[in-house]
Amino acid sequence: MGKKQYLLYMVQIHTNFRLAELESLADLFNLDIDFSKYDANSPFFFLELDNDEQARQWIKRSILTKAIYEYWGHGQTLDSLHDTIKQTPGFQERCKQFKNSSFKFEFENYQGGKKKDMATKVKQMESFKYLEFEGKIDLKNPQEIYTLIEEYAPAFGKAAPTVPLSYIFGRFVGSSDRSAMERYDLKKRPYKGTTSFEAELSLVSANIAQVKPGTLMYDPFAGTGSFLTAGGHFGALVIGSDIDGRMIRGKGANTDIKSNFRFYQESEKFLDVLTMDFTHNALRSNLVLDTILCDPPYGIRESIKILGARDPERFAGKEDIVIDGQKAFLRKDYIPTKKPYSLDSLLDDLLRYSAARLPIGGRLAFWMPTANDENVETIIPLHSNLELKYNCVQEFNKWSRRLLVYINRGDSFKGPTNGGQKRSPSNFRERYFTHFTK
Ligand SMILES: C[S@@+](CC[C@H](N)C(=O)[O-])C[C@H]1O[C@@H](n2cnc3c(N)ncnc32)[C@H](O)[C@@H]1O
Image 1 (cartoon, rainbow, N blue to C red):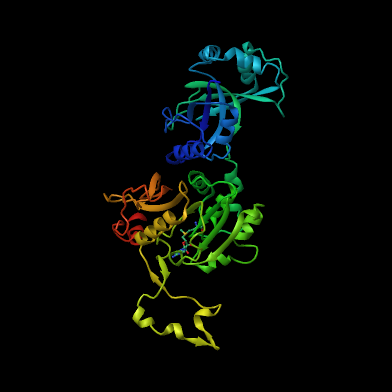
Image 2 (image 1 turned 90 degrees about the vertical axis):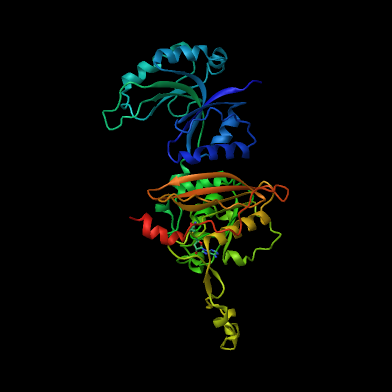
């Protein structure tokens, strides 16, 4: 059977992440999609797929799209839209296929246009009479929904244009997972903190990381567990760790990471979280971690620390301190000594760890901050076994952060590497406070 034409209607937010999300989901579901006509500036992507099932499966996890439609036609005026509908290959077959299905019409406006009154809607619907649908109109539970999308030019501060740039018509096939943003909205989450990552981009990150149902996802810098929550939503079994026990313990039995999973009725996805320095990792080395997704410490709110003594000579002998007959470091209330560490080294460790623990084809995705105030080249950490697949930038005023996504290709890959090199030009924390906040 030949391929069919579809229209993907996307959101115009986080457009730097959109293609990466769509490609990652297509790859996850083994779909062969030609992205050559994808336009980063347009909310519309016209593409071909084998059938509706493929379209539905692809888009139902997507966050940065709205819906996918079977494409029927596209025109600059309503008349030319009708002409293209009639001329688009398969027109007669489509009309026949849906002749007796109950249906309704929906109207979408991209970038403005007036709210349509009923009389205009009825007039527009009547102009589609030639489709000769005989099924009953059912506004509540129709078998098919036909959507007329009107695209308007941007208003640019002037009065909104009243005449559309173009009209697109299609049969609704499937919606995205955009409503998950509301469900996981931080405002409604019981346990959250200053480090919590917003719902939309944590879900997008999990999609680009190809988190899969029934697999193991690990966040080594779990904090309040934003990425664990996103991973759980897409069906992974999640495990997290953080050096800061306060994050892991939360603020009580009903205000911790575990209780967030209960709140979302996804407790079965939550394996556990542990207080642990990532660089002294206690997860057994033959445990396969299918995906690693995280937001390492940038050193903005706090400097980066790992276990160890800043001055080992001064610390010498302190391991032997005994309190109430018990070695101090074995007591529950023991707070281990920590020493500063650099972001470069921490990211090197993260890449090395991921290359060792991810299966071949498994993804590591993490966020990295960069400054855009100086002409300083951003050097992305690289490991010879990891292919850098995506580098998606989110721009702020004077700094940006990027989602870096790597695929583990194994020992035979031999890609470029820059481990052990000083990549960050100077301390990000210092630069953040002295340059970016002005
Ligand atoms: C940017 S925050 C991550 C926030 C997290 N995504 C959330 O949803 O709250 C970085 C976290 O890394 C933790 N961290 C810092 N150094 C660490 C280390 N050496 N090992 C493990 N966690 C560490 C910090 O305590 C902090 O919670």
